[in-house]
Image (cartoon, rainbow, N blue to C red):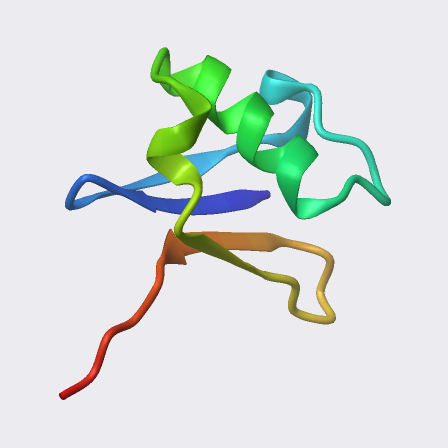
Length: 66
């Protein structure tokens, strides 16, 4: 499962929906998500991809503190 926080909304997307394979790097994952959301890939350039041990992906905006 890919958990995405994009433009203030949360989405849960199955890997097969966006054709994500095990071992893809962050750039490849962001490109697939940009296609899914029908936006330019630059819109996701500052996003962080967390990879917890359970195999899911968490895609979120970079946290800015202070």
